[in-house]
Length: 70
Image (tube, rainbow, N blue to C red; front, top):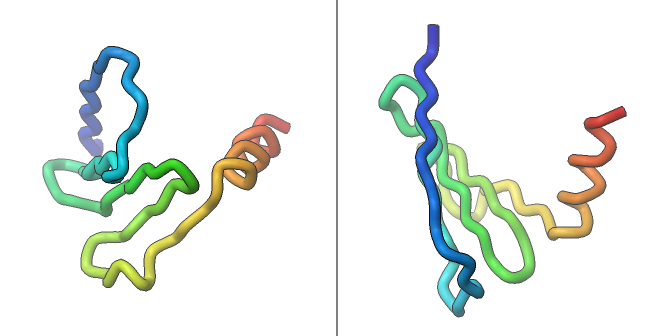
């Protein structure tokens, strides 16, 4: 069975000019990287160049999440 571990806690802080970046791992291996910016969420699968990442703005992300509830 795959091991997923997520631990994160920060005080509320406005995102600055630099993206917040998170590595996504499964069983200790990097699956990809999530970049969070003011305008969008971007997922870059491991081994892919940044130009091939998946980018979605916050409005589309909200719609995607809400649609998944139905």
